[in-house]
Length: 376
Image 1 (cartoon, one colour):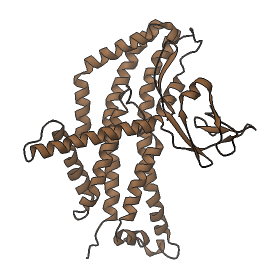
Image 2 (tube, helix red, strand yellow; image 1 turned 45 degrees about the horizontal axis):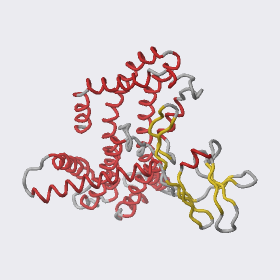
Image 3 (tube, helix red, strand yellow; image 1 turned 180 degrees about the vertical axis):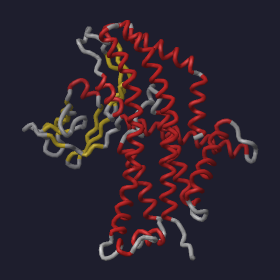
Image 4 (cartoon, one colour; image 1 turned 90 degrees about the vertical axis):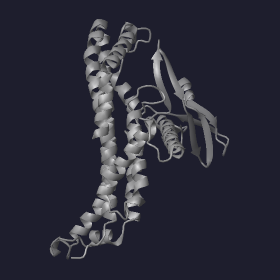
């Protein structure tokens, strides 16, 4: 908990500057009425679309809109159809709604598009001549994929700098970034891993626990920075959290010892009639092996996504009120910014808590999978 409180303390020490800057930015964007009300574009601010656009993945990275013109980073689309690879920029969907090319197999026209409704909403599909849609094999570089590359590169650079500092300073007292990372690594090792896993097995699982802790913690913090190339909802993406949970699942069950599987088949301390003739407890234990990663994935996904929605909801309320009255929008900005900053401070704490909880539960599962037999 010390880490979360430290982050919150650092933020609150500079609360005057944060509130002033946020208010000025909000005032800047609240002044022109055409931004919020029906103006040149004839469109109103749609809070739901803005929030969903932020928390969901997309083929482009929208940065901001200035005088009706969208400033975005258009990402490469990479799809496979009938064994052939097709690559193009997502900009074509912004300009023409469809991308037409030639099918390399039969030389017929191939039409790619992104539907705005239906089961394939927001995904690249092939539009057939009869109006039906076909989903190709899609490995495009989306917003979350690009953000994942950036965050992983940042994590590698940070650990490289820390490793370089250790080699340079040797046994001397750590300083700066080295001191911070040493504290976090020792914290994961002593307060999480060693308390959940027996001493003989802790070194086997420690590299994964340290990696997953820093990955979740750093990505949670980067998701709170609303400036490109940060701000993507990586740990609020169910695909990312599911992969992390599957890693924990496979490590637990592939490296579990015989005592772990004995407890699943013949749970100790349970009456015999719960094991025979109907093996009720073995069934429950087996189902529990699969529900554990599911809970890990959903907990991280739901908490991070909910935090983003709450903050965006407060910010969106400024623009919603400003559509009615510019003065009302300026007044609402004060109230909304206070609440948004308060929730952001909580989100800094949540960023640590979710990394801690995921790492702790993974360590507990590893501890159960590597426990030793105790003779009475």
